[in-house]
Every structure is written in C-alpha cells, then in structure tokens.
Image (cartoon, rainbow, N blue to C red; front, side, top):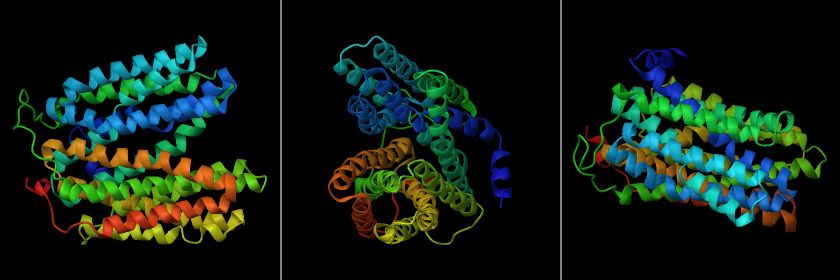
Length: 397
C-alpha cells in the first residue's frame, strides 16, 4: 500500500515541497484553538475568545481565493514570502495586544488581518503536484498523500497547542504555530524547481483564463454543505459527551473520526480507480450523508465511536475527489484559486455549522445537533448530484 507513496516521494523535489507544505500548514489545526485558549485566559471570557477566533476563521475563508489568485498570477516564489511576513506580523501583533489588554475591537481587527493573510499552503502544494504529474493516475495518489497529511495535522495540532498553552504559556501554542508556518512557507517559496509557472502579465505564461463557474460552483456549493456538516458534527459530539459527563472522550471520538479518514486516504492512494472524479465526488457526498443518519439516535459513546469511525472513512475519499474534480474543471493557470474556493467553502461551512448546531443544542440537546449535520449532508449531496457532467479546461494539458 505504501509503495505508490514512496514512488511519488522519490521524484525530484517532491519530498522537499511536501515536507515544507506539512510544516507550513501546521497552523491550520492550531491557530483558532490557540486564539480561544489565549484570549479566554487573558480576558476570562469565552464569548470574547470565540468572537476573536471567528474573526480569524471568517477572514481566512473570505480572503483565501483572492490570495490564491494573486499567487497564480505572480507565482509562489514572489508572493509567498510577502504573505508569510504579513501573516507573521499580524498574528504576532494579536498576541501582543492580547497581553497588553487592549480593547476587544483591536483584537478583532488583528485577528481578521491575520486570518486574511493566512497562507493557503494546501492549495499551493496540490498545485505543485498537479504541475509535476499532470492528468495521470499518480495525481490521485498525490492528492491522497496530502489528505493523509491534513488528517495528521488535525490529530497532532490540537493536542500540541493545548499542551503548550497549559504547560508553558497561554501564547506558546500560537507562537509555535506562527514559527512553523513562517518557516514552512518560506521554504516552499524557495523551491523553484517544482513551482508552477506564473500566469499574470509579468509571469511566464498567458493571461488568466475564466475560472469556469458552471462546473466549479456545484463543487463549491457541496463543499459548503460538507463544511457545515463537519462543524455541526464536531460540536454535537462534544455536547453529547458532555451530557454523559464524559467530556474528555469528545477528543477521543473526534480523533477516531480523523483516524478513519486518514486510513481511507492511505488506502485510496494505492488504488487505481476507474470512476471519474465527478462520479467519485457524487458518490462520496451521498456516502457521508448516509453515514451520519444514525447519529441522532445513538446515546452510547462506545457505539458512537464505531459510527464516527465509519463517518471518517467517507470523508477523505470525498475531499480527494473534490480536489481532483477542481483540477479537471478549472484552467491550470488558476488551479490554486479554484482549490482555495473549495477550501474556503468548507471552512466557512464549518463556522456556519458550529453556530447553527450550537443554537439547536442549547434548545433541544446534543442529539438534535446531529440533525443539522444530516440536513447539511443532504444539501451537499443534492448539490453534487446536480452538478453537470464533463470537464473544463483543466483537462487540457
């Protein structure tokens, strides 16, 4: 099962940019939680902490496609160092103003600036794989590898930031995330041999082509639904465990979900699938919607652990298919931007799902929160099933 991955990482330059990408995107699993821990420790208010973290997440979701468009236009080598410096300065500034006990609106502004400048490293690493491999079966293996990396980050990041914040200093988790993201982004930018060409007027390629919203929009819409499902699922798991006086098990249950997703990605990367990315994306969204159907009716945490492992097993194949669908839909000159749109849709959906399910849980209990996940899953499946067949200019290499 591991041989396809070894073959990929033996290709010139691939191990370097994949490792740099891992380091550079470690903050995605650490910063929002780190902000909540830091701000709540300094202010004593989880409400303020949650609003500051929300400002970071929402700004990141809103600005990622614009950032990726600039990177597509002018190149990773030129844009990523600038983005890294702005992000480090604003995130570091947020830590300083929290310690100085400045007014809350200042925290919101700096959190939004830090989120808006957060590098969407996953999109840029996947764009390098696409540039290197083109429309080949190995590209699916590469996307599966990056999905495994993403799941590893979300298994490692939260415990690390929590440990650092509690054992060292409330700001330690954010500062470690800042340093790793800064170094990883600069390292990625320095790897010119695998960099996709710039496509702006001052770049080596042609002017940017139309993004192809007719094919991309259904994927983005389905990604919003998938993200909403995730956000509602996470808070509902935590609430259900808390209702049974077993809050500590919520982290275990979420880790089990991530483990299922990671194993599915690892297995998928070693297969040669005959179905198209579009078909796999439709099947995957339906599979997620079906997998979560039992959740409102389960109160036993042991049974829940089995079910959430199955839910996790549907996640990575769907997200890998989504990435592959975008790569065959949008022109290669705007691939990072296309990938950023789906990533932002998922992130925005997570924030929406958490907010809606939180209100539902407050009024009707944890099990009702899973109903929000089911509704979001149905909408995601409907959007995916309604997407047009066929491919865009991304196939023309």
